[in-house]
Length: 309
View (spheres, rainbow, N blue to C red):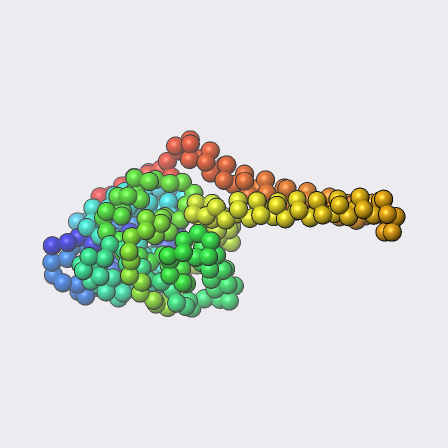
């Protein structure tokens, strides 16, 4: 007998919860009778009736449903980490509360786990979303594969099944300002990848704002890649070589008199370009330093307001 735990972050999902909960219970029939289920819902500081809807689901299935209510909004990845802290399953599934990811893939993912695969990824081969959303997502995942985590499948993913061993290891790491799901990939276990098409959201409105997307982009690169630092060094070397070559050119021109050296305008352009690069470089380095400082403070990634277990 094995226990499968669903970890489901929720943020302004009051309309989704009744539909999602019914789908979860209905999907149980696709598993063998010896599988038991645990549903951990994390209310990530929602200001609507998400918590009330979760309580209704808990009241119907008190032995299966756990609710973790956070004191404030900390982002879906920290909410997922909170759910991982309370998981008691032999394996875990992370899935969105809006059901854009197909529940009917979970039995197939579970079968791989039964065969000894500790990490199963459902990666998006396409998505039923706008051009802008696709562009941002595809660019983000392409850059992550290119410069940070080369072992991740194309298209990106946030729908995964993983063994309790991986769950404990991520909880023990307890890293701030990171992508918790990609941290599972960083552990470098062998995995199986199942491609699927992510459906468009049918109920409610997404709270995944541009500001949150940009923060995820920066957090992910700072957490998993030193490419920005290497880029600064490379550009610095190229600028240094260019300055040296230009200096030789000026000296030769000065003594030969063949080429007139004049103009504050060109000098100011060069100065402004170099200054802009320096400020950008300081900003990138500052992101790394700030995150190191934030981690050193040892502040918790989430504050639990109440639990219904």
